[in-house]
Length: 339
Image 1 (cartoon, rainbow, N blue to C red):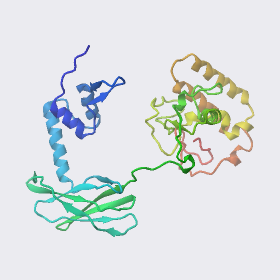
Image 2: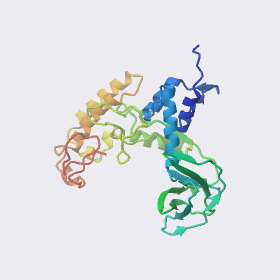
Image 3: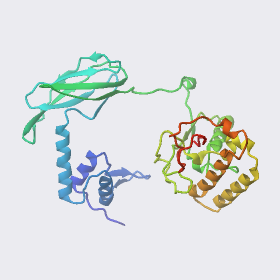
Image 4: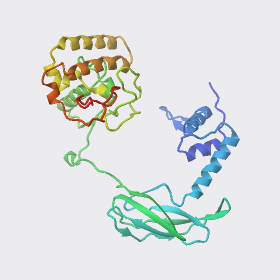
């Protein structure tokens, strides 16, 4: 059994200030400390050196300086009915005027100053004092601004008022609901191209609802992942999407593309699908990269001007500078959208 050495207090403090957990509960309920090497590596990924005590102390002091150098928090989040308190930094002894600019453009008051006995901080020879304020009750939900003025110097920050609870859809009423959680790439069927796709998701939704009365499906992110090109390896994690504008073309069923119905040579597509399926059956893992090049080839054949005489006329117009996501070719105004 590996004996874990106790973490240095400076490393624990630095990790917590950056929102990094230093321990967790495993599946048995046992509290497990995070190894020092892991914490150091995660901090390094955030651009914070933490291998030595000196580096950790320097990083903690820089955090302290940056905190006192800020006139207001980066963002303030509040909820209706709950008291929201925030701080403001001004030169020690100077007045602090705080007001609100609401989302609709109106100016709001009612911000109350409350006691704060934090000693001032010496920031490069300037004593900075900290004042605390409480937002007024009844602020509308939305995106507002908190503004600060002190001796002619003004600053502002975002104020986000969020609901306590979004509630449930009305059609559910007061009854309990249940559903299935799935990773789409693993929901393979006899017609899949080695990876579960949107047609499989549709079939799963219909089956779970009609046969078992399910109310919803929870699915992994379906956004495009890097680099998602016709030949390059794909980012294996579905939780690292590169774009919110496009879905991952991996989840498209080739036969579900409308132009497939007019494809003159479908036998070639069926042969390619059989090849992908045979490779997938031999593997215990999901082979995204094995399925991707074949799908790209089939989709390009399906959308090619040679596939059907009417295809070019049916393609939607697109801007000359708009390139298709994951398609490593120059933008062409007559090329169809692939996602």
